[in-house]
Length: 336
Image (cartoon, rainbow, N blue to C red; front, side, top):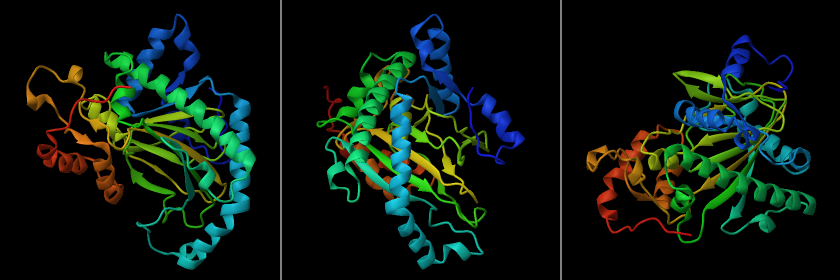
């Protein structure tokens, strides 16, 4: 495993968990090791909610260019705004834990169904071009992964893509974040703990500065920074569709006292009007009670999530279950 942790930031615990963290070599899907690689993906989805991909088909040259231009954009267009925000709120001199603010500088690029790239100010043409190219590669990778999940789940090929499609196709966008050095990392989170609301998340993270952690068996586990890898995690919608076989997992970003951590999280989510519910093939028998999750319109879930992002997911599912009776007229999933 090629890993380049930030100097002086590797603890024994980190090294131990790094060895255990599921890392999938996608080249093995094309040979005699395919069965073992598919089982590794299935185990990661069932027991971690996260895994890391290497040899995923996106060129290292493209990823290097994305990283270079993202960091340049932060320095030129975002860094001073972040410093001004910190100063105006006195965040650099707090003496009690902050629970309503994240130590991050961020903006959002929407790719599908309609791009907003041309509307974002101060993005130069080279950055727009490379991010468009990168998003196309990520979209292909996301759809490949959804079909691998279908195969592992015993669902027909294309089922998850259809489930996400709605009437206008999926929502797909990238949250571009930087986590600058923080003077009080013990009091301020880079990003507070949460599960992701959507479908499949593809993360291109800094390979030198760590910070991302997931909650496993009641303990926070580091997601190892690896050069040119793509980290995958599952959102709430895949938990619903798989009827809990695969689960979304709480994760957070720890602020660091030194080093600026880059993070590009791309969310391949259902369309706004996509109807989400457990796949019939995964519900045992005909008993309604075996359906552990409700049926709802994705946008209704997102409206609820926006106010409850940093709380447990179970009450969100219960709230959607309570409104399910009003949504009985919803039809089957749309087809492409």
